[in-house]
Length: 229
Picture 1: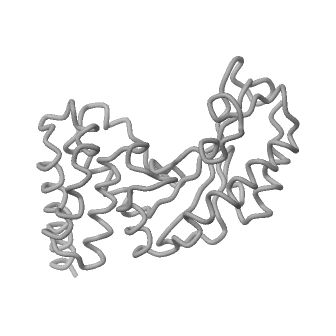
Picture 2: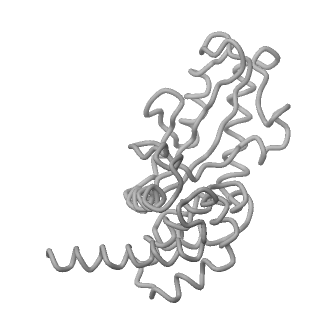
Picture 3: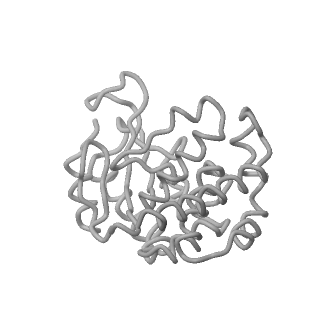
């Protein structure tokens, strides 16, 4: 049985507060960088009383950069990109806690019928504290977020995320931090293959075209804002 009260208490001990069902936001989040924990139940039947398995992810975002990335992919991506969500708590840059922990069980999840709620809560808390925090706890401003997204390393490698969305976030952050267009394009060159994986059914699937267009859009949008101010 899913014991959310125990998980809520354990996550509060390390600074996460419940904002809605199965979603927790870090207290040290700011407008620059937000940190989330997401819980997911699956199996049959799918309800909070009798679901078979629980898994969890951590997420990190700058809300404005995420909005730019989502809009960019919806503009130049495939029809399926229209289904991408962007709201007050959603975060495409999310990664599995169980993969980091290495001892959660089959499919990096907890079989809820086989472990106590206290054990699940403790393991989730400790995985975040000892595995996630060393990698992401210091990411509290846009400079650090940009460096974090540009890196291709555990626990957030490019291979386990939507590369086109990640590129969009990088473009927006880099532009705001004063990087020139050519410098941004060069920084994304190592990741063109990963970006292209999300563009295979786009009207123009060329990842270099995509990167150049969204960089131009970012700078043109900035010029438009300056003209209005």
